[in-house]
Image (cartoon, rainbow over all chains, first blue to last red; front, side, top):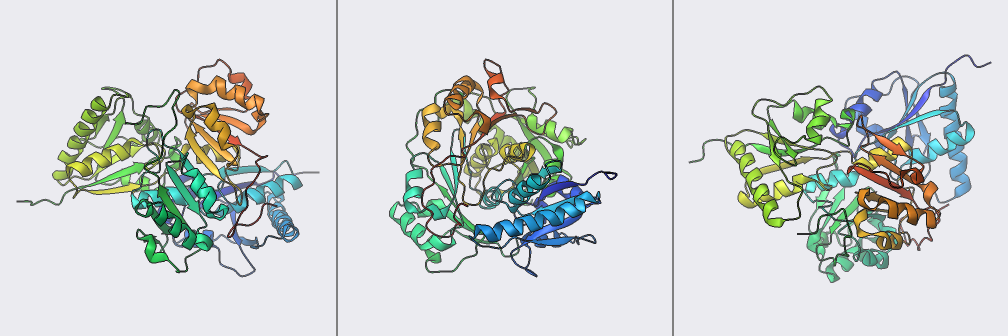
Length: 254
Length: 254
């Protein structure tokens, strides 16, 4: 017989790295009665999400715990960890304990939380799951560098750079702004491409925005053959785009 | 002779509508010594940005003022208003007064602030301009409806629907998620298109997310021939996309 009301799981987006960029709602969730869990890549690994709240001088409540999400392509290893993580969270929820899952950036955008929530719902579709949205790294990067991501009728494409130069090139036709994520492995190729397209002065490289390790580079040529962090992106404005017709509902470009 | 230190202009992003989704940094800016200004479409018009802070029980400090940005395509009328607004703000800054400009959503994304900041910099390139980023409506809409905007290697396109059905259709090739903005004038055409593509159950309509007038519709057919608000969008997931090769730096789709 079920006597306890199950706890709620909330994906709490912490924003890109500066604890001041957390929402007031996220801040309240961290001060509620909920225990915390947070993703790590391996046992005893560090959690970037936990690091953000630590920099706000907050400490995990008792019983808080790390969840391991390994960096691997192997779907059987991943599934095993997702199920283990989901079961760990469910144990607490079933004891009537609210749980918050700490997420860097925004919980709906390239986030581990989507996997966790999906797995928990598969195991128990009665669980109450809530999401508090957050400021994504590309919005914070735009604010910091004063790049307008989109004016009036502009279009934005957000994509992992791994799709390659041909894909990036083809998107210049339809998009005024490209947000290139995970640029690390393709950085030299991207720099060559931007040079060839005469777009170097329209691109800014931003690493770990809002964190103490924030690194902003306007002269992309200086990054050739350099190693950069995994949490880095390039904002690319595409000022010479040939614009398609706007049918209705949008002001014409001035 | 310049005796006063000029004030700073800060674009304060308030998030999509729920005052709890303001960042802590935005909240601090609203409690600083700065006076506020906020956009209205016409004299004595209401400001959605001011409405957000009003719902947090905050009132504008003395000397706060509205800036008129008319809804028009006429570039000469627009320029006239941008210059008038910039001069109004500059007058305060030159008296050493800090000014915050209230922005709904995110100040770098389809925002009036970009126009204001650009015009002020043209008039006086010494002015210190700062931007506090915010949660955009599409991130809040994704959180509210529990739609994942992007998993591991996914791609996102954000565009005003006004580019038309042909453009939207062509983007299904390259994008896992489409965020369609300003859908009001094309809504019936979009619904027909989604029906034809068998994507109706992958689309959600969201109006004024996070505000008391929030309106979420999962059954888009029910919106045929209906009038909707200007501040509405459609989140469209595109689960059957043929994915291009990922070269490096991205995990393969499982």
